[in-house]
Amino acid sequence: MDLWQMVLTDHANIVELCREVLRATGTGPNGRAGLFAELDVELERHFRAEERAIHPALARDDRTRNYLTELGQERQEIRRRMDELAARPDVNGRDWAQDFKQLAGMISHAFTLEEGVVMTLARTIIEPHELDTMRIAYEREKIASIEARRWHMPQAMMPSRYGASTGMVFGILAGVAAVGTAALLWSQTRQRASSNRPLRPVRHEPEPPFPLRSGVIDNRLSRSGGMGRPAGGATAGGTAGAAMARQGFASGDEAGPPGTPASGSGDNPAQDTSWFSSANPPRAPSGLSTGLQPGGLSPGGGPAASTGSIGTGGAQTGGQDTGSLKRDGR
Image 1: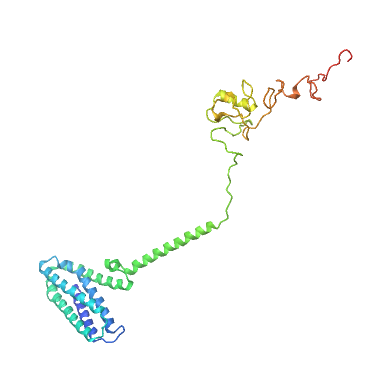
Image 2: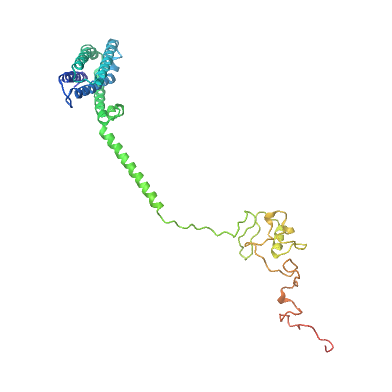
């Protein structure tokens, strides 16, 4: 069936549906109101298919352009009267039937103009290969209109209008939606499982009893068991002053009160090591007078290494006598 045969078949079906509307009475699917609603759908589907698939090619020729203008005016009047009759409540009344009879005459006149003039000129204007393309476009428009009504979607969104299978496209979309839903559920299940896991304590590195400022003292122990060197560019004099401060006295002069920096440590508070901490424990005095041992000890060593001490209570004296010596028999 070529394009013009499809158009003539649609015209015949619409004219027959108009006769059924006039003969129908009562209510229900086969009543006058139901048949009129079906006529409205079929008439609008036919008009849109012709206007989108056939009229653009006919508008290129001057011989058919004027007829298309007259045909368009008649279709606007038909649509207006169809809307008026659809809004009236007296569908089964005599007045409504008379008005519809006039509308059916206008539809028949429009079809006669189209078949007798426009289609006759179109057969001489349109090439055979273009006619086949227009037939496919006309058929797709009608199928898209039927599917749009079934799916309650706009006709422009139907895949059949563009040559694709509507069932296949909707099946692919449904599959993609199912996969996306499954992925979302799986992600939520993993999040719930991870949130239900018992909490594990996080191990932290041991910290000193109080925080130390960065770059003040390197509190790492050396291999020899002593304290590390002061961090950050200490001079030789500052290193010596820090060592003397760890022994408990200041270099050169008498020791000041606790917390006073040694003279060799300079004015930089970052090199002050005269205070005690877990990283700088106090050490025993080594024989010189300090704030902790005002009397001092002999330079030779501790109390056990002194000789001739009086009243040491039996400490080691290197084999020498201890106590006061008796002279002249006293």
